[in-house]
Length: 282
Image 1: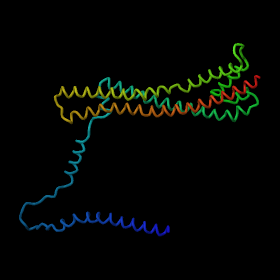
Image 2: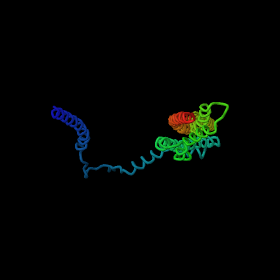
Image 3: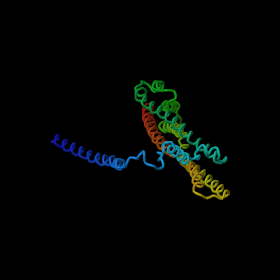
Image 4: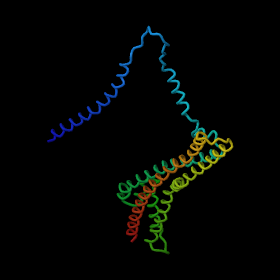
């Protein structure tokens, strides 16, 4: 059954290929008939000589047409001929874009390191004989180590104002808040760029269109070739604003999801540590 199906499919494809090739062959052969039917010129016949145009004028005409279609407008032209407001807006958008990618790369490396430390907690910390030994096995810059040190310090120092369980919980909560603030550092910049950059680009577009219309009004020429170039160049500002805003929004959402995952791991570790320290204190 399979061989039969493949045979039928092959035949159909072959017939379709023949049907596609036949019209193409007919089209290629059709122009040849008039050329063959054309009478050959008699060398002895009197009359003006017919000169065959060379391909050089055609190529020069094509080059001239291509030159006519070229335009001087663009980002470079906007920077060179634009006002100081145009340059200021472009610099601001460039700073926003550069800051977005810098924060993303640095935070991504930081988050990857913290997630790597979370794997060491189960392998090194909880397999240790004592809390102090487990703390020494964790990296010094680890947030998990800072939480463990805070919990151990609260369990050894103690206080007479609140119970041991509440005091350890308060110490761990403060350390978790500090860790959360460290994770959120720089992420708000991404949110600000994502919400502000489109309007900054739009402001540049409005300013550019205004200047273009003023220049056209002063010159007294309102043809489409005088309007399309400056107005289209002003729209570059909107594109630059979107180019800075869209990555910022996407990277912000990505960073927030990873921060949420890290926060959950830190809270789970703090809860387990609190339960262990309270049970040990009893």
